Image (cartoon, rainbow, N blue to C red; front, side, top):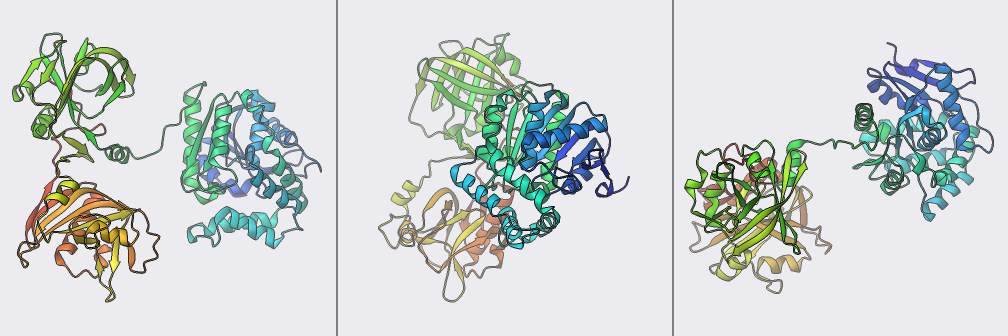
Length: 603
């Protein structure tokens, strides 16, 4: 097949268009100042599965001028004439910017002709300041190829200066703006400047499934506009692409086209009511993100049909209501104990203490007799209650809810107990024990203890650069307080650094200085505003290039870079020469995680 950009035709009324591919028909409608060829990346990607038709709007490309005081209906009528000429009764319509308004008008004016709708970077009820700006631009339109107007438009769309990665896309847009018919552009832009409210009261009548997609950085076709349109349309969905601007169709064509085709595929597979768009993201990264939530660890127990105790480890536990007292926990449908729990009259939730880490691992495994490893007794409702737990909730089954690949068990609490033991925590695939707190360190650290921190901000670590060009991590004598200038907190406060300390990361004794201990935490930091010229933020992958005098700190930072990439942290214990990295804890083998430990649901 020839290059899609060269397959140009004209309809009897003079409308220019490009047609390529075969399959379900899709009509593409460009924005002001562009033409059908602007869709070349989408045509090339979609023509293997779709019959793609890209139209030159009135006043653009090869098409005739619109009326002097044109309406959206004039552009929609043009599209309908083209569909009639091509013998297409029903199409999916994808419109960008002004083209999205035309697409909406077409779907409202001729609903039987539009099977689905994708509105890219559409405008809707501009706020006063945006409305004034676009009206002023419409009134100030110059002659053909006005260089200053084109430069301002390119800067608005791509930034000033233009990022190198967007140079080709900006050149494509500039070429289209320089070649568009000046009168056609002016008439269309004047309509575009005032058409953002045309469908305010009509979107509720939009019967076609509709996707309203824009970029998070589009200041003129904002995410709020797309969200508002999606809310008004009966079968509307909103999708915001992170980091994208107004011309995302050519700036990130693969990303945009992938979302378009995914929506069209779903519309084809599922006939209306509302079309839910499956998020396009990495499942492992999603799991890691869920694991960032620091939780407690529980063992959920019940009695099965044979009268045998069953249990599984879970951290998907939360309170639901105080009146009545309700709690919930989730169990995977593939868990062997799912039937026992989903058909039971009740269950118990045992919140584990730090001393019960081994029990957590056993109940997350496929051990044959898990209850042999713990002391337990029957509770008020007959459910097994595990001794030594921080708290226990004995529940009757209030409700069973189907939720994707899990079931939600909502329990009404009939009895509970709790004590002051230290709870076991879980985060990022490992157990954590918050017993070694910063306050405990501040109170109990021996004199001379150096306390420092690896403070991260958006993939960068904070350092202090010395006059000799070497780099130091923030550190002080003890954790201290903000008013203690020698302590870590005091030194951070003196430089206006707002830091949050997190988990303990390394502890080592200095073999060359008697009784000197080094303690380092992980943490996060806001960018400082003090203007201190010695503060440096260094990308994690570049830390190895820094001049760092202390070999123990160099070694620690190398480990941090490695563990940060793997999202698996440990704690170093030893001295500056030798020691060991102790994992926060290893999850039980074969333990699949749902925001934390596994739901095996086995006995």
